[in-house]
Image 1 (spheres, rainbow, N blue to C red):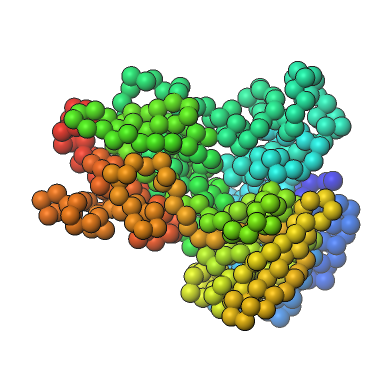
Image 2: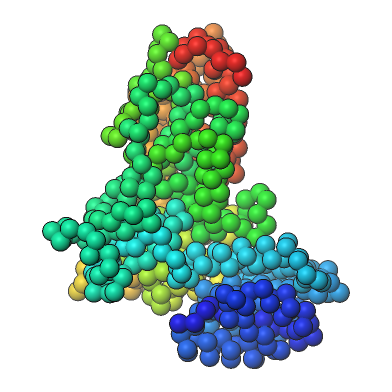
Length: 563
């Protein structure tokens, strides 16, 4: 397999476009053609030779109807490739008006002004983002930071690969009979004898029995913390709220520790592309957003410990600190932020639960989506996460069906995603329906599902090799003490939502303060939260001012601080 290809199509500005992409020729197979017919033929020829196509770049100098056919045709041929429209400066305003809807609907990934000279880094930054996203979700890693050795794609192996995807670590899967695997296996004891075996760039190699085991090997464990230290803030949960709090707290000089049970980014980190987050006009994947936020927090001094979920919280009193307990050690802190987010609710169908990891997945499971190329896939859920999972799966699957109990998606999904789904020919929406049964093939993997019309009770069986369940919010707060009050659904109460009889002096707690002094809540775990990435980020940032105010009181959890 050769270098992945970038195909450029321009009738009248070929010289300018070819010159702009000259810098990519060292690492990509850049092909320049004059019309849409040649572009399609070049793509077919490359695919026949086993070459991947990473990016199509179309000049808007072609007639609108022909350009629309070109976009649709190349999407059918190479659904995984990214698509970029470029307009010459003489045509940019007109092209922006004509093709704005195509960008909004996800038919193309971006519309950019064609470079008019060298070093147009704004243009190349956008191109780099698209190629970066393609390499992270489709391309085969050139450098494997982690190697996974396994004779089959069993549930544990797939869960490890999905975790590595979510934390942005390039990884490769190798059969034990391969040359790479033999080299790795030669360095571990012969009696290890268990799969999968994982080798890391850190130098260790051996069996990994769980995602938590892998996370601890990569990032360490909480008992490495000095037990005599009391930190200013411990953040429990590294989703958008926890990451924002970590960045702002540590940037303002607060000693901050962030604990995460699984992958940095939480549920939002599984989103293949978030297009409505402020400041990212071309969108950003949840993994990349979380990775950048983690790097930002690390730069300011936040310490992260991944793979050890909080098991209990002992609230401090009379000058003693709060203690967050984990199986790997305890963390003592003057203040605590609960930002553990939510998990997906279980479907509750025994036959489906028995196939989890064998075609059935809770969450987006981006690594699993790649394994379903050419297959029929079902996504259950009506929120933005489900929509993003369906769009991502449609890059690989033959068909994607979104199953929702409501008649359609309009009440629960952002309009931009609804439009993108309506346009995508591989995605259909099955409203007023639910999954009630499913079964395996002879190899024990999902083969079929049975859907039920919630209005009539009529049932239909259909082939399906993949099922992604994104069924709404189940709070992750069973580890919290009873004195931290929650609503009837288990979400943490804060501010004016706290029952009036628990207010002090008839004054409600601060907006993000809980019923335990010095303990705050932000993000999806908080009752009445918006369940949006931007909202969670805002709450995480806002809570830092409350932490400062609490530390300045100096009435408990250690001496007063000078801020």
